[in-house]
Image 1 (cartoon, rainbow, N blue to C red):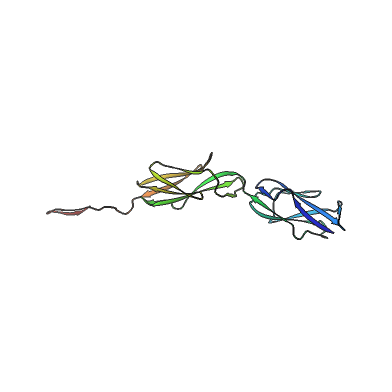
Image 2: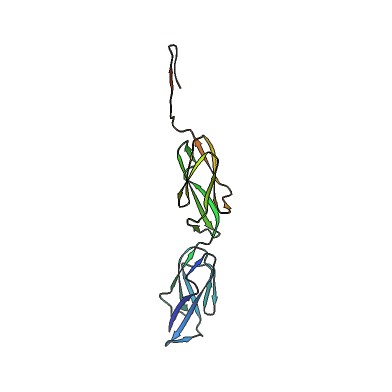
Length: 195
């Protein structure tokens, strides 16, 4: 007895379903009355057995292997088939500052990370942006990362965006005085005062 494993798709997005179809052959002839089961590695929570295999709905992005076997353990497909689950469309965008305090004139880097509705990271989606207070210089350094430079002391809020998605909380970066750029010393005949 031989078993083969087939898929209705080899690449899907998280939350989409695919069917695993098990084919049983005896002396090269198809056999329909053998009970089969499907094993998925790593395991998937949403597996619904069918008469010819299973319907699965993975929600975690990654690489998976499906293997058919008979329910009595008499035969199995040792090789199985591989499929890929990619993140679904971005549902959330988060603002992740490298630092929460910087000196005036220093660069502060902020990452804008996107996740699908299952918590899978969506890598470098098109349309990432950042909103910050006026008077802050913003440079897109690529890969969902931004460089911010503020020259005035104060608190600045950075909020990542992705098309219509907006991080609801944003993050605050505190800009403090940097090292002095200019010093002035005044001398007088009666008093010496550095300023």
